[in-house]
Amino acid sequence: MSPTRTSTTRTSTARTHSTAPSRPRVLISGASIAGPALAYWLNRHGYAVTVVEKAGAPRGGGYPVDIRGAALEVVRGMGLLPQLRDVHIDLRRLTFLDGEGVEVASVDPHRLTGGVGGQDLEVRRGDLAEALYAAVRDDVEFLFDDRVDTLDQSDHGVDVTFHGGAGRTFDMVFGADGVHSRTREFLFGPEERFHRYLGYCFAGFTLRNTFGLRDEVMMWNTPGRAAALYAAGDDGHVHAFLNFAHPEPPFRAFRDPRAQRELVAGVFADAGWEVPGMLAALHDADDLFFDVVSQIRMPRWSRGRVALVGDAAYAPSFLTGQGSSLALVGAYRLAHAVAGRDHATGFAAYEHDTRPFVTGHQDRVGEGDAMLFPTTAPALERRNAMLRRLGTTPHSALHTG
Image 1 (cartoon, one colour):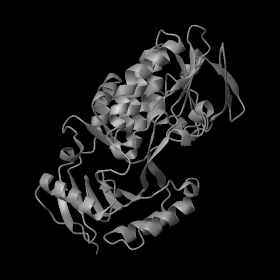
Image 2 (cartoon, rainbow, N blue to C red; image 1 turned 120 degrees about the horizontal axis):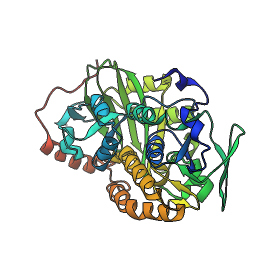
Image 3 (cartoon, rainbow, N blue to C red; image 1 turned 135 degrees about the vertical axis):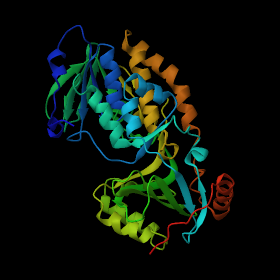
Image 4 (cartoon, rainbow, N blue to C red; image 1 turned 45 degrees about the vertical axis):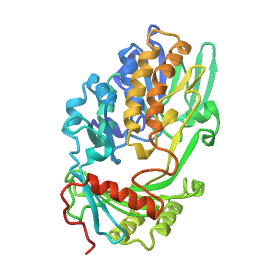
């Protein structure tokens, strides 16, 4: 990554063309997955693109994500497939443990997820985000350490005021700013109207790999609780996940890292296996990501000259593993739908073509029935019986000291 990555506001060489009257001007809010992917395809269609991102630089790190099906064709069309194959995580097995840390079953990940070995990709979210950013940074204007404060639509465009004080007018604006999208709130109101809580919370963070794990997942379960260690590669760290059922979204904890840690520690206070060490690492983790397992379901994804894409419009939930794939496919379809059309016609075509694809993925997870995270002892035993049927040759479970 170039040194300019750390600057608070990065303007690429594309800015010298951004005022050309022949190029419609568009703004994308969010520079994670959907945002840079949309920027790539809009730039290809002749738009002058600006991306604004509240973080000071492209965000690295993050948990592994899947790229499957139609999303593979999107990254292939961007010329990124060879690069992403180089950083593919070849996950070898998923091992499930009971409450005592004893192995229940060890399965081939593809047999459980429905993925296709040798075709589908699993990469660190940060690797995907960096590849997308590198694909557009020389053709698109990026404004880091800033965000949209106001949107004012009119017949001539969208007047945008940025938090940094600047004001500009764009022909269209796109919200690619995630599950808790400010752009969506500007357009349609509070998140609660579109938020479908699926009954679980989770915390993710990294810790040192002192477990001898590589390219595998170890998951401990008791009813309503799961703890997982995900070792991707040999960088000396593992991704830790603590997932638990919770009757209502813990709104108090959303903006309070201390409350998040206290909630998770309380839920897992009596847990065995490696969980006590995970809780100790959680206390000092500087990369904690806490959220609820939920979906965003909306009757429409656009209003006027502003449209939503990716998790901002149709987050499928963490449990599906398909958020990044939907973001990539949605970005591709949105850019192609608006190319050469007025915004109203383009947005209508985007929704018509993309909604069945999105709904099919969202409907795979229902409230309270997440297969890997049963909330009752009978449901857990049914899941374990299913895993044993899928199981590969057993191997030793990971035991605490």
